[in-house]
Amino acid sequence: MKVLHIINGLKDGGAEAILYRLCSHDKANTHAVISLMDDGKYGPLLRDAGIDVQCLNITKTRVSPLAMLRLYRMIKSFHPDAVQTWMYHADLLGGAVARSAGYKNINWGIHTSTLDPKQSKRTTILIAGLCAKASWIVPKRVICCAQKSLDVHKALGYAPSKLIVVNNGYDLSKFFIDDNMGISVRQELQLGTDVPLLGMVGRFDPQKDHFNLIAALAIVKRTHPQARCLLIGSGMNHDNAALMKCITDNEVENQVLLLNQRSDIPAIMNALDLHVLSSAYGEAFPNVLNEAMACGTPCVTTDVGDSALIVAKTGWVVPPKDPHALAAAILEAIEDKTNAPQEWAARQTMARRRVQENFSIETMVSGYQAAWSE
Image (cartoon, rainbow, N blue to C red):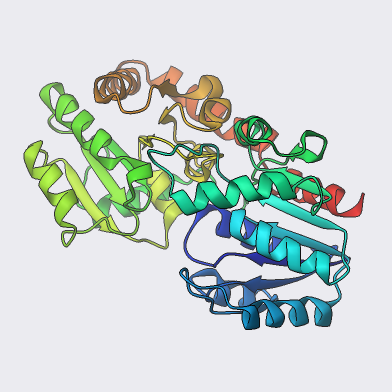
């Protein structure tokens, strides 16, 4: 089949990463990608994988009729057997234009789990509401990456018979247990193997709630001052005034290491004893939990999206926005690793097996293929 993907943009994000994995691992079909905005991070990576990528360079503030005409012509020129859109704006615009171009095998993609007026943008909520109405007409299927996403959008008014779940999948040939990679990262950072090392991979964004994690670290410091926490992602640097103020106010300057963006995430995951996800809202099927677990790194996570489903019995799940609960789980993990090494090793093995058996890239690709070919 010829599958055309339409996505808002190709920045460094979770849905964008899944699009890249899907296109590069599905060898049974031919893929092309249209970005409504620009190349971002994944445009060049997709091209390197042999995927045709075109960009409309639409700005966030204005969608012109000329841009929609260009999109119409791009769709017609590719003549796809299936159209897969990604996220609300692309679902609405890409779906409507593809339908007007005469295509009916249109599959929407949903990668969020909450739409809270206090946290989500008003335009996002408006677009999601329009999508709910259009879902009865435009798409053949609405593919949700998490069960939580399906439940939320069903309640929002999406056509229930069209909603299905295809969980994100992960390339276990890239994310695997490798002690040497982990030791190399610790040596780079001048951290011994005996140092309790926590970490969180995630951009600086209110959704990720790094302030919750930093407040929890201040509590952890009271009994484990030797513990260190790596923060990796866009905005994780000393130029971030708000982040630096939070670190200083909580007196954890010696505990936190800011690494900004890194390209060696599997090595980072292997270096960590524990990965922490402190998100407050908005997560659907967090990639970082699966990536950490695939490297044998147990996780502490807030109960957002399908995080509890992912972690299951391999880690700890706590309420969002509760630094005391987050700190308690981190402390319990540190104590378990220190005092029960055999049980900890079994937990590491169980974490990787959880991803292997439930969230492999092969399982995800098969799920999308089935939706497209129905």
